Length: 335
Image (cartoon, rainbow, N blue to C red):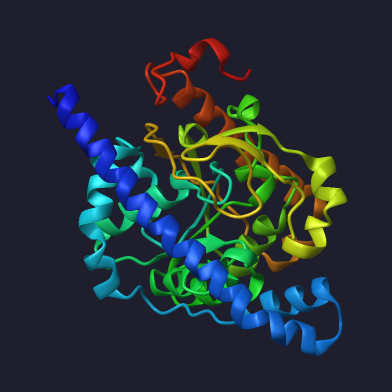
């Protein structure tokens, strides 16, 4: 049992770790601007076209090699601290994970810094230590950032694209997908109990093509690492973020250390919210390639995965003291 002083010291240490990472990220963003602004101007195609071309070219750099063991081990002590003390992370349901390569599918929260996703991947490494490779997937903008994109590739993250995901399964690896993408990660705090897959059913077709089972994953608590006050969809449209950053949302957040902020890029240090994650029973997928074009079948499996995850989230949300604020969320669990 830790006393208040110990817990405060640990929280301060965690904030310091995140703050250092945030400063490095800011430096990377500045380097991106300084290094590429002249190249974008030289092309003469306009800012939007230039940035999109740059993002597109950088997301082509991916690999399905195993994670860099030196990088994974060098950061393991930091992640052990974050998992055990900062996020008090709990992950259950390992008995549901098939022995064969699988497609894990879930939801995530926290805008650009989805700690529920990162903690899942960190716990996977801690459990398997490279004996079983899991590839996380990321938004194009994050994969394109200098420094951060290089780090993602070192720890096995790949773009959420057909080519990279297919290659990962062909290599005998597992892949975790968050189909809802930014509309899921940036959903408002009032929607924290709602599973948002965004109507994106490509993951069902991918599972059919690759002949892998789908393993739903439920998680709860990541939404408390930063509070999304509003999705500001109209503002995002006015700012042209769909064309510029491939994002329909300009989240207005309440976070540390800047308070209320419009977060177009990562600008917060995640709060030490408790995160719970559960691996659910697999959803069997027909390996008949013709099923890929069977709309009724794809819709049916999509709804089954969505239902399974929602049931899991409801169950996790109903547990006492599941958030940083020690609120019994069972009173507001989605029906």
